[in-house]
Length: 113
Image (tube, rainbow, N blue to C red; front, side, top):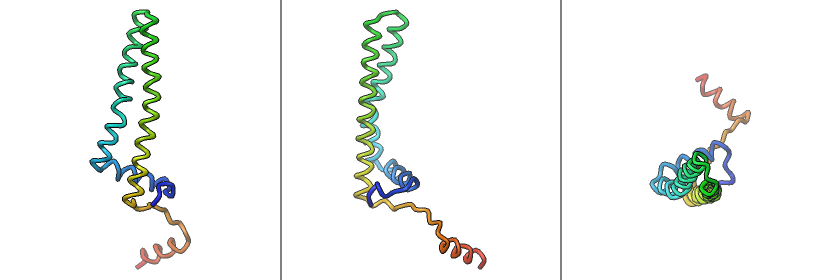
């Protein structure tokens, strides 16, 4: 099943199924550890530069924060690509909501019995 065929519930189920696997946990860690480190270092260097009124240090901090943004975008792309591959290989069940009249009538008949 292609990930592009899912509705919102199907996407949530696919992410939940991927997140439960050891591979999904590893991919999450690998994807987001570098942006997290860059964010913490960039924020602390920028704050240090602002407090000590040093334009060089502030500039380096802002460059690191810019690198954080680029790494975060790349991490998201990598993570979602892996979720897509996971869905293609594992045939995650498509969660659909059927609201046709036939289904509603059948469920009403079953509840009366």
